[in-house]
Amino acid sequence: MPLLTRRAESLDRAERESTGSGRAGGNEQVSPRNSRPILPSWLKACANPGCRSSWLHVWRKRSVPIFEEGWTCSPECTAAGVEQAIAREMAGQTEIREMHRHRIPLGLVMLEQGWISTQQLRAAVEAQKASGAGRLGHWLIRQGATSEERVTRALGLQWSCPMLPVRGAECEALHVALPRLFVDAFGALPLRIAAGQVLYLGFEESLDPALAFAVERMASLRVESGFVPESTFRPAHSRILQGAFPPVELVEAASQKAAAHALTRSLERQAPVASRLVRVHDCLWLRLWLRAQSGPLPETGAVRDIVCSIGKIQ
Image: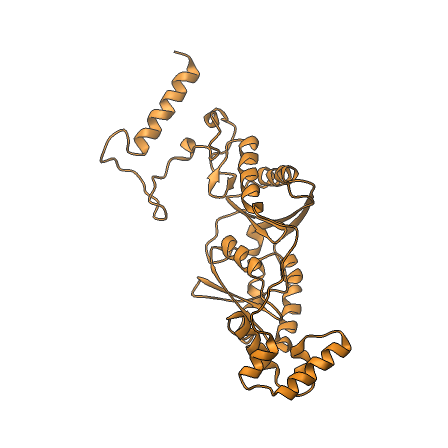
């Protein structure tokens, strides 16, 4: 019998025995997370469904790289997984970003709550039109019609979300929650993590559900968004931008295939113990964990971020 054939049969037999199909009552290890048998590293199968020769790559480590909870046996299999993930993330993506439309304008919300009068609302609207700039809330505060706190609470009523305090926030410890680019470009302020399960994300003018959903998927934490008053948001936002964020690599790709090639190259070079891909508006965010995560968020030096923009949606 040829050597390669005997090797393949012995691997198949060992895998059947380790999963319990060979005989019942075996002393197999079980993962508490997914209740599946934990195979020895030398028996790990490639995550690419189209791979038919993962066991032939004897030079390949059986522990890394891991992309979206699956080990791949070769750069070709890694590329296949990345291409599928990109196609999944970009499905339904359009080039036009629709602005959020409120059912009730801010002025009417405040009028309904009795926080301003009709005359005060009319005066603020006229001043806004005359200047051609500024939000209505700013003009209401500037004219002394209401307070900053009430404007922030009115925004919360519009979006059905709370007003979040900055006092006692852990902003300086949450640089690792998302790349600096997103904190700056989308006006996000990570505030605190509650019970190791909920990340509170603050905004000043409008929420960003797409960003919040991406962070939720990436960090495996529930994200609660809310508004922070401008007078406290801006100083805290400036401070966090000066902190040490995880290293980030910016990639510009002309197509999804080019993006997959660039991201695959990074995965193969860094060989992460875990990695995940999500979309944030028109960007792809790939996070690489270089070592295992022990808390709700990894250490700053334990992760690398790659933000990829695709010039043309295929």
